[in-house]
Image (cartoon, rainbow, N blue to C red; front, side, top):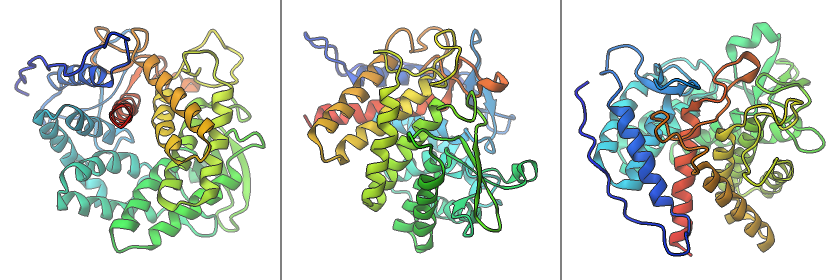
Length: 395
């Protein structure tokens, strides 16, 4: 595509004399990185053109098409950059990539990731523009996602393609994030059954997806006919009994979001329980977890910046909901520290590549995207920065 002029973005705020952390400075950094990425992407219609990840020691994005589960994070990040900088170029680019995702609202559900794909992209687009065509896509996609719900089990089937392999209905902890699409659609559309589906999925997950110490399994298998739990296991963690970092972060974010929509105190209580075990076991003051909290390779293994970004974003919200002033102060302090650590020279990509962050871990057991820059890490990082900025504005 024709190169887009990357004019320097003015930084509106600077470090004050107390060296207070400045979210706008980091938002502007992300904007500069995104502009560099935009200049490297192929034109529409020329194969895969959606950024997903940059492997360690490489500089080029791995590009995917709209069917990839990560396809919505890039345009979602562009919408956040438009919100954070008011630069219309980011709106234009977000709309460009959103168009490629529209078939997801029209095709049969491939797996549970429709929330990631459509609500991160079209959801942010509708929130910022109130474009009625965006709303139609969101509502249609929610109806599609609901087709994967099994009422006997009480959860959405995560991976239809793996049913034959497992011989069972499978649900993964990541699926908690996709419930936001259903809750929103039930509130803003006519299909009120979506609320019950999302709520029941969360309740069933709360009952079956966690060990006694509130650490999460990655995958739970159910008998598709009786709904009985068969077993909990992992797919991307170190072992079935360990706490995979990003999985626990999905739980923190997911149950916090469920409380936001339902105001069910069970979800608020549970969000705190899954958060507290995560915070208690963080390895050091950076608050960036190793990819699995219990891998015996620690400290000679990779961290997961994406898990920290997801958790930080969730904690900014959870702090608003908890009743205890002590808990509120704790969660806000941890969220701020996580974002500040991610904004350091150790974790920002800067001149290494065009992503926002380094040191995320995708699927270490198969050596996939290990110590890499990954688009969902960037997405939740910019989301966290905007929440941090809003917090400072209202203090």
